Image 1: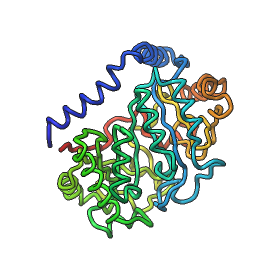
Image 2: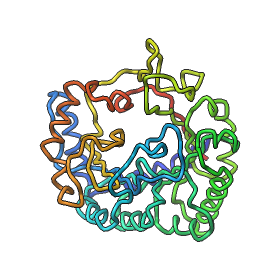
Image 3: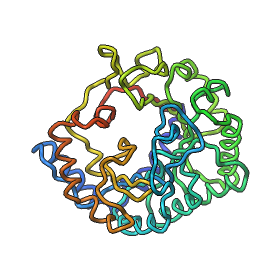
Length: 350
């Protein structure tokens, strides 16, 4: 593992986030709001978010079995986010934002204006991160476009070191296309002598990949990526084991309780995410977080005045209060790892 690379990445993140002077007042307010909320057990949310998670597209080209978009469960009226509406959102909050996560349920690159969103966000001095299945970096021009967008970080899913293991979960995927795309992106960075985007290979821990971790780590280093990470698998339905979970329990976020799966560590009556990060779906709706995959709880829409009002809406306030009283009463929250410590997580830097 490269300590120098880890320091360089940490320095890059700090320079563009923690040391963003215009966001200092909001950082203080957000931190104080969370402290007050935990001390009093009452909602004291700040007047604006410190970060955004925005879904460029709810569509996906793959059919992964534990992905709500992949199995066709996500059905938004507008599957691709309106770029102009997104720009208005960034215009409103950019001064105070630390970062924007440009991904959620779908594949971001399916929105034809995705890289335009990235570049606009960069030009407004906001840190950008995306996550992709890696199928849309198909030639040098597309790799160059990603680098020129000034994207800060890109996570590429690689759930397996062989085509057979990879496609057993990534249904409809092409192992070779993803590997070729990573090589093109690494080459485009080198050609321009750019540090960004920081390229992270992310592997989901399943019964197929748990024995391949060392090989995937070495393969990532060989490809020239910056980080390889391992992440526990989230199941859409915890009523029963689907056979996908690792046999080694340290690699799973669940444990078996009377035939049902439950999160390790239990669910606490708090959610810090609701006090600093606003979630916007492809149809413009503002929802609590990425775990509300179906948009059950909607507090407004950025396309009809919700840019400022949704975050402070009465129904969002009531939702926060529900979390503080009994988070377990909200089904989607019983499958969320927010506030749970000790789950397996690993990163290698090169």
